Image (cartoon, rainbow, N blue to C red):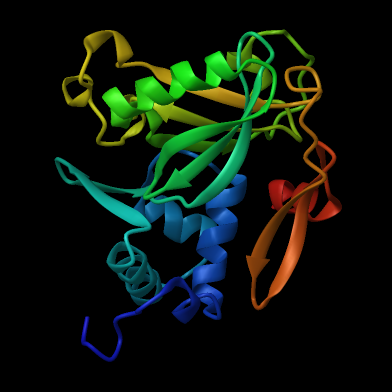
Length: 229
């Protein structure tokens, strides 16, 4: 890629129609890694257009190229911002994310000690806060009371911290300060699991405009049509 083609920020590529197709695919098909041929088939992009956009995303650190034998996968990376989390004792904390990791948490309601304990863990073993998954439920299923199934329910969303090697990520057990912390922890947002946390809207920025894809834990018509395509 020449210096003139190299993007300097995410805003440099948001106006790209090819990039928008990739974003839509990652949104409605949140597999942890995707083969080039599969991306081309699902996005409808030509070989050169897809290669160009993938190089841009790699340059920005939003994708990581993974080679296994003769196959190449692309793993989404990077995260900034904040999100709430419900601890097992019912405490609600606000997770502050920087560089793809939960850097620290602050108390919203409940036990300060619960949040303090979490912060001590993040400080002593920082990779425990690394975000290794972002997913959206795409199936019509009954509530089971088990995250492994409920995270697949249409209208729900989840993130996960910790190990990601089993999903094609790079965080392996040996990178944790303590072996007992080498876990993959799902954080599910759903009416049954987190009734205290409201998610009025999940939005996607595409082609210069914002589109609502989930509203109050219900898929919008836009998302339903995307899943049927």
